[in-house]
Structures are given as structure tokens and as C-alpha cells.
Length: 399
Image (cartoon, rainbow, N blue to C red; front, side, top):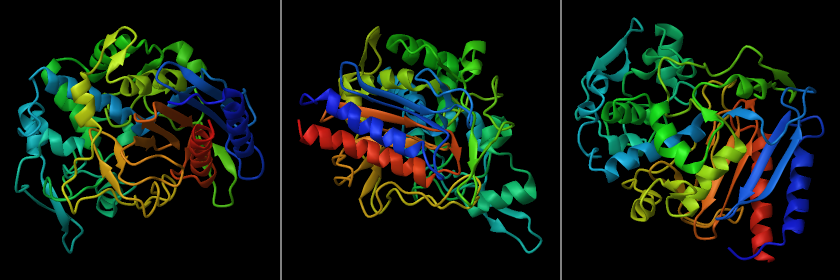
């Protein structure tokens, strides 16, 4: 990456953070960071962990939700490297429970689910690409109905019952964002014979020096955890003191279950910028990184808008409407330059409580923006992230 004038970059990014943490539609607090291949080049924290409470700091702990996915995907890629995982074999060879699931065709006149066997077995490749057949109840009306009328648990419960849901379509026939990567975690557990959190610790976190990130928080992490807030229809914020991802979950959910700090996630971003290498050892081979970041959906499959069918959890949400988007192992890939300046071929994604990141391997830069607000797609937080990313590319162009 070209040398960025860091004083100018800091001033521009500080301005974005100040703006989103002030006024009627403010966020409670935000931590945002930018890294190049060597180290963090910007770190900012504004607002509070809980509305009008303890100030937000760089070491604040967040429920990172779906930004967990890329870490679980990394552990699966390691299994592929070692010849332990055939991406095109039935996933039930590694996680037998997935082979018992039926497909939900709809509901009969009595409101009972109409189920049938899927036409083909789901594969781990399909799971990593979100073509496996699973969804989320906050993005899919059928799952929402299963939750409301038939007791299908929310994924945030961290339970096995929340994982073992019916498929929504035959594997490989379409792209739909859902619990696929939670199943990838189960595949990894089946191969390694260990809980996913242990595998992540041994094979990702320790080589990268990532300490404060886990499915279960230490007491120190609990004391620095930000509260999730609900945004009301009038723009007001209310702390959701009773809502949190469970510590000691029944299942280590590879799709959304981690807690962590932003500085720890920056170490993971740097690994992808550095062809799989970390400060304490290699996590992935360079050739694995090279193919894993490429979009792999089969046309006409494509990444689509996420419809917010449970308004308290998500708005309708989409990165860069009108810009082509593909999916890789396990990131969104934009196939055209985005309005922020993010180039075609860069990768990234988001977490339900309005956390967002991107990784631009060509420019050698990446960033993470963390807030704790529901519903997803919060205009102030999401808009702030886009302004944050735009300011980084403005600085690159002007350097």
C-alpha cells in the first residue's frame, strides 16, 4: 500500500466517529480500526459501552456475530489443506446429524410443516458458499413461521435444536444466507474431535496472538463487554440489558458465536493480507488464501439483498446495491468497484449488531467497525461505516 499521511487519515476518521456518536440518531458507541500489512494505522473509540455510561475504549469486548464466520471458515480450509476434508463429499460424513434433516416445502392447510427428503446430500462446499439450503428466521418467512408456530429456537440461543432445522431448498440450487457456517463448524469438530473453540484457539488464535476472543468470556472480558441496544422507530436507543449471546453455549456456533475485541480481529485481517502468515506461525498456505478469496457461486447464483422479516432484528440490508457481489470461502466478494472505493475482488462481511469489516489484499489494507445495535442495517452505524471506508480510500488516492 502507498504511504498514507496518517495525520490526515486520523483527522478524517476521527471526524466520522464523532459525527455518528452525536445527535438524535447517534450510536451509543463505536470502536473502529484500520490496518495495513504490518500494523494498525488507525484506532478510534467514541461514545459509551452502554448508553451514557462507561466510555467506549479500544479494548471493549463485542459480540461479533457473523464476523465469526470467516474464522470458522479458516479452520475448515486448514482441514482441506491437510487432506482431511473433501469439500464435495456429503457433509454428513463429518457431521452425521446434517444427514437426518428434511426439507421444508411449506405448510399444509392445518399449518403443519410439509417435509420431504432433500434431492441430494449437502456438501461442505455448499455450506461455505451459503448454497446448502439453510436460512435465518430474521431473513426468511418460512423459518420465521417455524419459530413462531412450531418452536424452532433462535440461533442466538446457541443450542443444538437451533442448528438442526429443516432445509429451505435443495442443496446447491440457490444462494441464501443462513446457518450454513454453523454446520461448517460441526464438520470441523467431527474431523478434529474437539470443540470448535478449542480448534480456533490452537490453529488460529494462538498463531496470530489473538488472546481476548472466545465463545465464552473470561471475567475480565465480561467486565468490558458493550451492551447491545435497540433502535426504536423514532430513532431512540434503549439498552437491551437482558440480551446477549450465551457464554458456555451448548454448541460453539461457527456462524455467529464469538466475543472479541477489535484489536484482536485486526490480527485476523492482517493474516489474510499477509497470505496466511501470522506472527507466531502460518495459519493458511498462500495458495489456499489465493483461491479462498475468489467468488465461487455458479451463475445465476448471486449474493442478494437480505430481507428483514423480523423488524426488531434486521432492516432490509444490502452492501452496495446495484454492485455485483459473489461469495467465497467465507466472505462476500464485490465483483465491481464499490462506491466507497473498495475495488473489485476485495472481501468483507458484517455482524448482526452492526459490525462491519473489509479486507483489500491488493491495496494491503483492511478495517473493522464495531457497534452493538439492533436491528441490523442501522442507518447511522452502517452509513458511518461506509463513510469510514470511503475516507480510507480517499486517503489512499491522495497519498
